[in-house]
Length: 373
Ligand SMILES: Nc1nc2c(CCNCC3CCCCC3)c3[nH]c(NCCc4ccccc4)nc3cc2c(=O)[nH]1
Image (cartoon, rainbow, N blue to C red; front, side, top):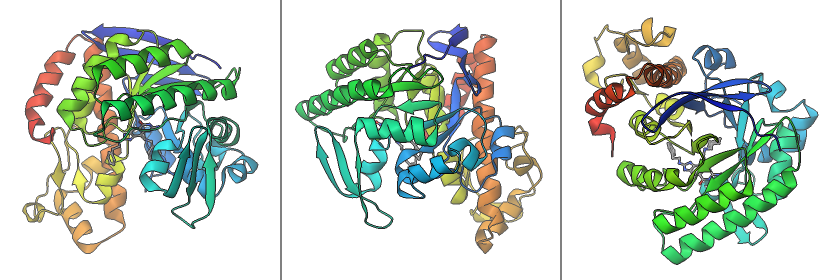
């Protein structure tokens, strides 16, 4: 397994600004990774994703193994060629999506058997099969170990059982990954919100020798404050030199507060999912364009976001598009939100490099206080 060079360029407190160097290109951190679920960042062309500033996108083992099938994606040249994205790509192992989407799933110590939510066909994921799909068939630059995302809340005993299973699957994932020299594998920490279990999981994952470390089991309903508290008690057990990735996070306020606690990488469906439903994220906080107050508002979504979707169309036009159910509504708003999330990460990176991150953080805590729920 390769360990990609991770250079920290600047720090402010626990916040780090750096570059993760991969064979398919550099990833500027802190980085927000747009989610390309089934080989597409929903409603966007890859050029728009790239122009918005994204260095890396996510692919999804669960969705692609069900349709069109992982072997078919390989026959078609792999996910980069298939989806027309030539930059770095990270794929999740599929475990989380099995929990959140599949029907009739059956767990055992070696893996999980489940029925497709699409056509009911039976599938099985083991650590080795997940690595084969991610690294061999889809061709991911960064793969994730197969893990069990522990339900929240849960007992200490249940959290420890789950953590131990993920540690075992992490070891098997590393063995299956072998010595691929142009791809890397990240481990995933579990442990729910128990300090002793997060420490046990962190020390276990760090000792196994991954190319990066993810914090799993978060953004599962615990809320902003609990998520921050869990990050606070996990990061001290992580080495400075490996990238840290909080999975499934999150809202803009979550990104800022996680960067302040030493996190480098994020993914979330929020920009495109909320965009499809009329929610626009701006520097002043979220607005829902379907609100009647925008019916004759000629102002742009956000003066400070340098994207045609943010500058060239009025809020009144967005209001009309969503009231009329026009396709262009979700398309433009997904584009704006994707550009806003990238503009936020760029401002975070610049502020750390210029020693003004804490000033940015306190300004955004005030502007976005109501979004912490
Ligand atoms: N292995 C693994 N993945 C996790 C994920 C999936 C991360 N996104 C993958 C991505 C791949 C491509 C398809 C989409 C998913 C999580 N997502 C969330 N919360 C999302 C909370 C959320 C936020 C906004 C809207 C919906 C849900 N917590 C997560 C915890 C884990 C975890 O422990 N282990």
